[in-house]
Image 1 (spheres, one colour):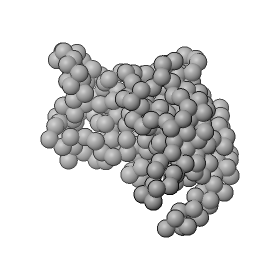
Image 2: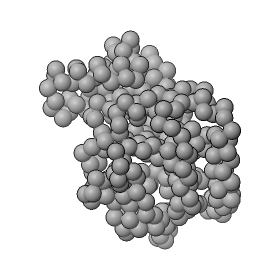
Image 3: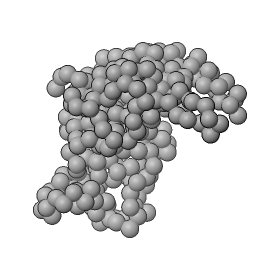
Image 4: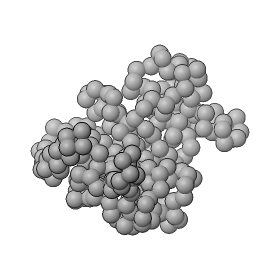
Length: 267
């Protein structure tokens, strides 16, 4: 696959504060998300990373500029073909793993036989086949997040947006979950955009990493990693991984200090 899958053109986002002033949170930002790539976004806290994802997904409007998905303007709802996974555990505790994964399809009125086929495929793909009848309370945090990812996958999105999905997990589990996401990315052929605070995660998983400035967030640089498509967390032992992570931190250190000073003044 090639070409722009999603595009932002001169996008900004501003918010009215409780004091009546205007907070310029994001932009202007212009960039193309290439079809089939794994793109990560890193930046200081409060720089607008999640806002960027919400604009691409249609969950939040741009104040100015335009967002396109597959050449069509993004409206006020998530476009068909886009799936979103958030950090929070969004599984339903009263439903089994199988029922959780099939929930969205059921809401769409998909036939029972098709739901079963897609859910079975997703259970195998995310390694939860043996836990299909378990309930979320019986699963680890990483397994519950896999349920949420599988619930998105069965909808067969062409663009998957991940907003810090592994933020609550320990480092070792994050690395293993990253491997699983890479496997899913290759298996589905979808375009993936990941919002993360972890520079190592971004350096390891991505074809490209967009590095954002302190608020109002803009891209300082888009870093190409040069990784092969067939990759996993073993790359973390190599010199190239260290070079990429160091470069990302070199770009972000000063911006993170600006963000900390700005937050201290606001407090």
